[in-house]
Length: 91
Image (cartoon, rainbow, N blue to C red):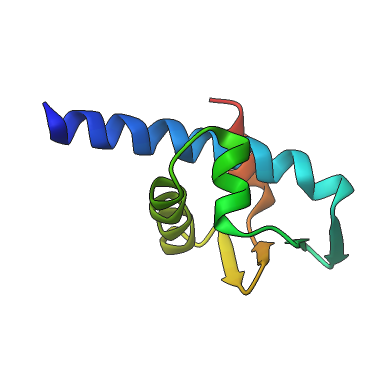
């Protein structure tokens, strides 16, 4: 049961984080070609905004990075695949 709860929470956090990054993209970013960069937010900031633990957001970010949707730096998330992010934000 604990494993299901973990994955369910991770799935919800990933969905919320996708939506949040997609929302921030047009307003809080600099565009460079096909990629957009969201700047100035820590993982703790993002966790507060999606109502999740920071560790859950960290895991969600790792999943998005592993899938090639984003690149991550210090207080910076570059959205590499906007189409995939948009599709996942609509789930």
